[in-house]
Length: 386
Image 1 (tube, rainbow, N blue to C red):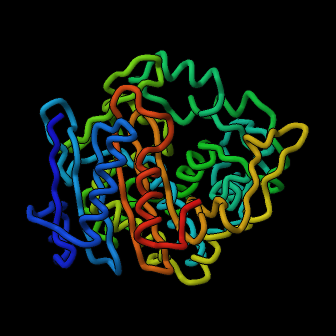
Image 2 (cartoon, rainbow, N blue to C red):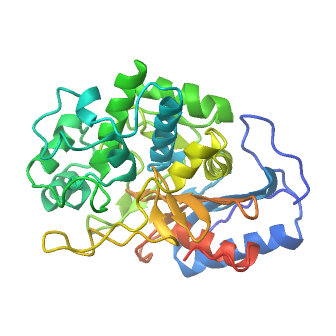
Image 3 (tube, rainbow, N blue to C red):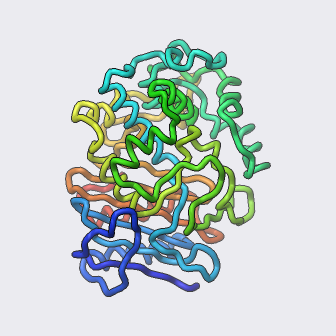
């Protein structure tokens, strides 16, 4: 297979704002070690492509692109890919900003802002905090066999908020809102709608004003259609029983309309640093984001198995729109053949961003996270993800 590699020397200055490109040239030391780890992982995990970027103190250590986007088309560092749950961290951050400004309260009932919600179970008890920390008790449509069957039958279907709400509407709550923990995509669909009501601004514009704009994320944008801005990293998936291209499957089901984003690796690394350090929040709000009350929750009951209501402990828990794992702050989207991770270790001021696509026969799981975990062992000894 043809392989393309873009690298920059470890001491190189950051790329120009808005431009994600790597200069050609030999690298050594830590930068070379990073690329060697990525190469080995690419082979061992049967990956079609790996794009990565590592920074310390906001300065680039190395940016690399290995493999192909399509047959005969080398990957490049500026290729756009779907970033999924990364936007969940942005939505949670914006809510905390609005709370800081007195425009809403974390413990506001969601019905204060979305009074026309259909008859969701427990809707009068669910708060904004419970949406962001995913402690509402609402079922996750992504784990509903009927949703999965519909999604696989028509991967190009466009999903509306009403379509998605129909699945948790069909189930009782897993538990009394706020008393346990279980991941549910519908929480963030509702959070996006609430943010629009609180701010009076469409969600895509709100995230641009409060997150992408201030952070200089010029390669990150919402899409209301399956289109991806060029240059495109193509994705491949075998979930439907055969290995196939999945690049333009409709992603409208993944999160709130207005937060269905694409990005490139340079923005993802910048995002890792900013979200992982609380750059957009006050210290008090960032403390809340790292633990909005989830630590200590998560336990199986007669109604909720441990695979759903999983334990949230100090070393590994869901915060407010993000994951905290052994000191790392991260998000790790994986869907429809796209896999990525943004991870930041405040103790080392170290950011790791990776995206990866798969070849036929690749093992299940988020390959980008696997690579990031391998990098963490080398770059931050004593600070593994798990």
